[in-house]
Amino acid sequence: MSRELWILRHGKAEPFDSSEDYDRPLKKRGKHDATRIGEWMKEGLLLPDVVISSPAIRAITTAKIVCEVFGIDHRHIQQEKRLYDEGLVRVKSVLADCPASFSRVLLVGHNPELEDLITYLVNETELPDVKKLFPTAALARLILPDDWSQLDKGCAELLSITYPKSLAEESE
Image 1: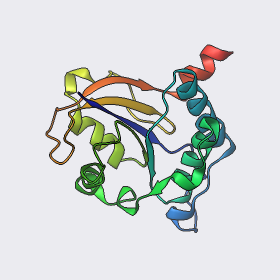
Image 2: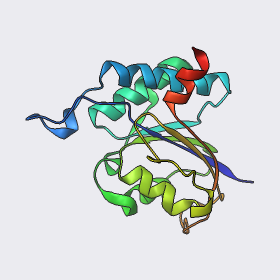
Image 3: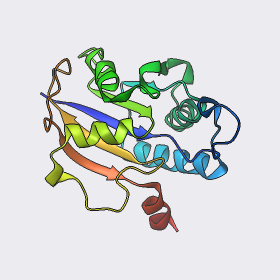
Image 4: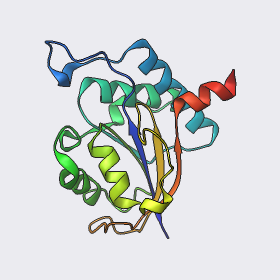
């Protein structure tokens, strides 16, 4: 048996100014894109067993919007500080701590860590040839081995990367 990891980058945030990066809120477009990705997941019956999010405002807001679309109480979101600006090794440690009983995990966070995670887990030949691999509100779906305690380079199969821009075009 295998498990799925769904990696969601936060929606488009307000630009960095004098405020703390951690506290940057989503722009209107970011909220719209998060809603659209959530609707697309719901339409495809892609409901996670658990949602784990960075506690940074733009990431947790994205997670809450997606959960609202699913009808999941946002109080069930697990906030994990290792998903904010701590690098690939720390992100992998979050996955290692995921109980095997969760077969479909939604991880909400930031670049460069999430893009680094995807390029680590997936063979380079499976990655799409695009200008920007993992823009805001993109969702990557991966199949991983059952045991997440030791995730080796190239151990995952990439099912898809979905971009909100392509969803908006389909629905218009």
